[in-house]
Length: 384
Image 1: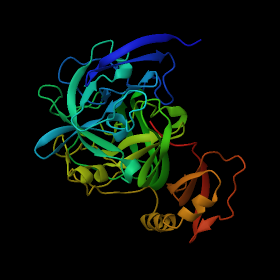
Image 2: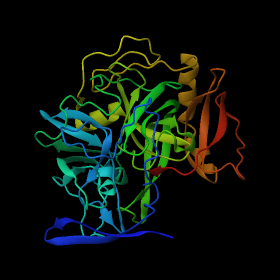
Image 3: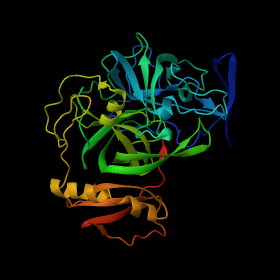
């Protein structure tokens, strides 16, 4: 039996929004699952009363509609136009695109709060204004990234850009590589670790029109990063907006902006694409940790991170070239949702065709230009 809570949020242009919040949250907005926090319990949904560290709960102040309230993760701190901005996702800070269930749509300069409404009993308990919406990259209008920024308010955010359970990151970036160890800090699963599974991924991601709204369409993305997410242990609903970084203890470099996934895989926009869109730099410390890693040379905060994939470099390049020809094959598969480049346990690259389910699926093509082709069951990808 569902529990029932009456809740209200602050007035918008004189209108008080009142809604019924049922116990089970909308799909993909589940409760905290708890992550691998190294034995240190940190509640990423709790109100921080000092300058907030990122990797924490937050979102649009009016993210309540259709009987539910929603939220996501305030992921990282970036800088452009001489000002510091929180980096998160479009669908976390600005994806209410119809009046629908709450009578409003997201607009620039709207308040961004911490924690998100979903973690404040839909506004019944304390939250803080920490920033104002300053920029949007809308994938439903053709953007290749799902990103939004919010200019921080004085005294609201830790100016070092520190992230819960990660600390201060590097101001450099690094490109993803298959097999690369990664970590993130997010609202729902907290601090978690995984590995990069696929590169150069073209994929379809489903979006709703507002909190607990109807599906409005799919965003089409190219050149994305896919990370292992077995059993949603790395990324789950509400973790969207988390920063993907290399798994190094000292000044890890940013790799991507997490925004979507399924119960088997998570998807990130390459961070250089995100920074390039906003003409921004990462806020962090100079350099990176001294310990050895497998991810290649560093970037300058706007891009240019090096890359060293597991597997032979020439074979990786060949697989990426073959992947460019895989679109037609992916569309011939009945439940195809994308394609990308992976590397098997022996170090041999292959083209992966992502399908919602392997049941009843078969491909009549086993290779493209000498590169093996595999069907990979991923489930349907949705914005988290």
